[in-house]
Image 1 (tube, rainbow, N blue to C red):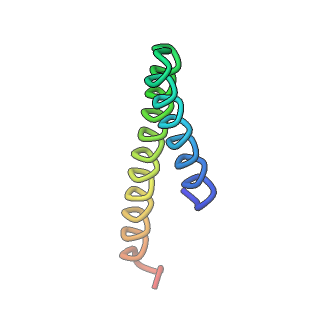
Image 2: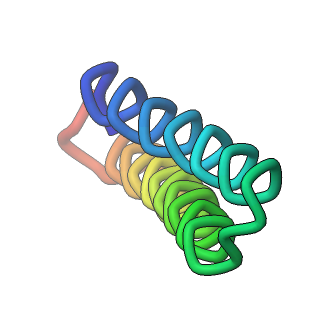
Length: 70
């Protein structure tokens, strides 16, 4: 995952926090829930990106050990 994707996820998380806070302050439970969903989506994207990076690192480690890849 690149820096741009990290930034997009952070923005989505912050927007979710803002929506949740405004929804809570105004008694708008729909907006509050929408904010929570935005935060959850951002967290899932971060988790998937982290897992993808670990897989990529694992593949690179295996490739480095194959004969002819010195």
